[in-house]
Length: 295
Image (cartoon, rainbow, N blue to C red; front, side):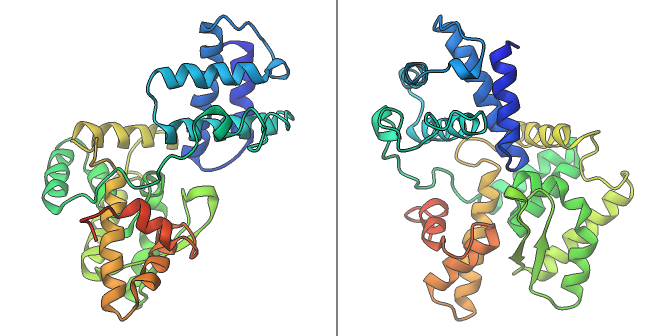
């Protein structure tokens, strides 16, 4: 790893965020450094990065037909890194030459590209995963019926007994604490109580027999890698990715809230909170989690 790459990755970590956000940002930092070297741009310190270097990087990525949303995410990561590094002018999203519009990467749709996983596909995946790693299979089910992100599902072993106790007391929501985006705890609606209680009982038993872990790896990083590799090999990729589990939860949660007497707008706002997006992002949930024909 070059000196520049080490600097950029360090700043990427210092910019904070969830495990996944930091990991993705670090990969982008390393890619940026490697690409500059391939473009014969010889710099060794972040203080030597210039406007043209960033423009050249984005142009080289555009040639590879990378999606606009991905390029926007990469620029957001680079801006976060440059901000931590004290390069505030270059990190300004309204920079005359480095805004998304100036770079030619503005205007991408945020419509969801994934689909809610059908029950048949879910059962097929779980059957395959059970043969390889029962803990991963349980994490998949927890993600599907509680709406957990990957890191939340991997770390859910720490909360299983608390969730079980809350549901047994008659509560309709459980508090998700570990692995949340930005470290922000949230409460999520449980609308299939009996199914989730049964799932929690199985997960608790499994953890009791496996050193308190759903995925028996030495670190969070390796546990997440294990989860992703196993689900990918079982067929969770393409339009039915691990995030499709949350899409399915969101679809069913909206239906549940509407059946309880809420308007679609109210249901969207509440599901936004269930997913950890905040109550003002009901429109975002509809745009990203629901495509025509999914509602």
